[in-house]
Image 1: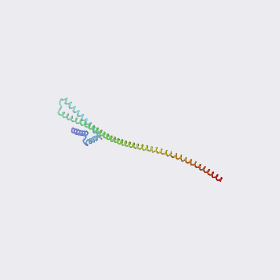
Image 2: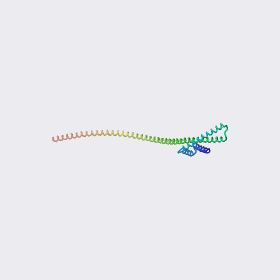
Image 3: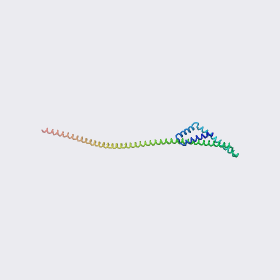
Image 4: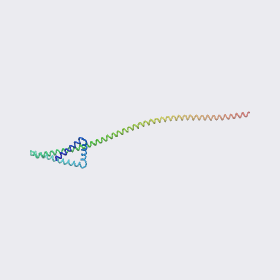
Length: 217
């Protein structure tokens, strides 16, 4: 029993050391081993062993107290009782250290697993932050590009407005010139009509004069 406890104690000490100190891939192997112990029927088996060792520890403590009380009553402790007392004390100490190391290994595994999860979460969050920063940078570039295009469009619209104003002014000028030309044409037509009337009157006067000359001759 004592040899087995020494073996378990050394094994637990090695596992605890590997969990506390990172030595190449050995910590990962130790983590996987503890994971396997905590999966399936492992937890029930560990609890059963812990309960059994606790019962043995209590029995050893009771035996130690019993031997001490007997020695106090008799006044002396026999060599056989001394051997039994030392055996129970060693066994109780080994069991106590074994249970304590098992608890330490469980807590180390728990906190290391939580630390790994936090690191993964932190790495994922960092990647998401970098992705968001890249998206923000891309949005800024698009915003700047849209702003430059908007300014370009505004300049083009301003140029078109100026061109429209210029065309409007030219159109109004052409309309004024056309109105003036139309008025001039109307005036020429009116003058031409007056000249035609004057010409007809002169023809009539000429015919009258010719008729008078012929009648006198």
